[in-house]
Image (cartoon, rainbow, N blue to C red):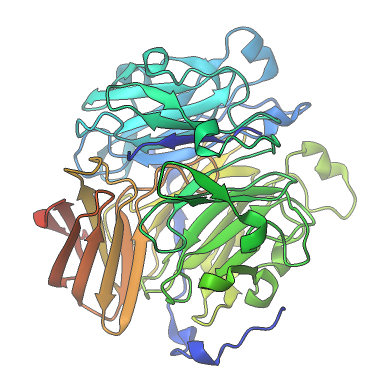
Length: 518
């Protein structure tokens, strides 16, 4: 499957004694409320019920965007299609909802000019032309769509003039991967082969993600593949990459098998200053958790961490590391669903529609399944794909948006009753790209140091809130905040209060600070 990569910034036993931390036993019970129907998210994803072809089971993604710069998150859902509909031109590739009041959304797809038809798969958000308005890129079967934001959620279809109208299966079967370099004039150049990321083996690539896994301030590229080894491209600092997936330990399972990998995310789960990787996999293949050991490479600790056991009968898709209770430690969320509705007739099988999974970080490289404790097991089962994460109501807690195949989406508002402090950072580049894609924020609060990076495209075919969220536990002040920009600029702030949304401009300027809506 083809992974489309946009350049838009232009042994089994592990010592845990070194990770001794206060027990999380007193952590609050996580709680989420599905508000999708009351919020107005009523348009159904499109998919034929029979799923005769694999393409009918792959779509699609969801995403958060602020398309009118009002600091309230709006929502994108990739629509999908069917073979019969596609033969007659396809369906509108996405639906756009604008948040017009607190947690109420209006369908503005036609008003926004998002009318291109096709078979949508994945969505990402960026500001490719640096005009201060977030743009939308959609991949699909038979072609893509690039929508330029003209301001206030009105978009222009610039797909052809940009050079991103590519035929074939863009997240499809056995085709080369593509990396497009932004020329800065509204057009893109395919540099895949020159950069060394075109995947001559034509693996079945799905969600690609950028992350600086080795802390050399250059973005590296990770591509999970379905049924083949995953690829890790190390940035050589000259516009080219070296594929080191097998050598690094991030390509295969702990027992050396290639798995059917779908979704992916990066985070520092143990506060050792290195980004780790979670990857969701196909049925009978446990999800992977690659622990980053620096020069020693990655080791899959899914079994010892506790996230593998429950995942074996599931088909995993959208996923994220996120701090669900603001204790300063990243937890794990996984969306599941089989690709074949016929699984409902298999005796002893788990079925086509499958439950969500939520894991709490035990602060020692192990995780506890808290799905039942959170009440997520009471939600109706669905065959889910994309999952996006962001603070939809600006209260300092991360919410979850889910794509349900053939159904309207789910919006899970985080209602966890926590005393933990939090902060959100909205970054605006000046020398760097305005959306700050590739920027890293490092936060010191108390004796804990955390970091994260701004990314375009993540999870499975989805887009998270471009603002970075940090849970701070009982620390009400951040003693140090450092922003490392793609340009090389570093901005340092001292003694910032928590429980704020900070808008920061490259060059060390706090443009705005707004209290969280608690």
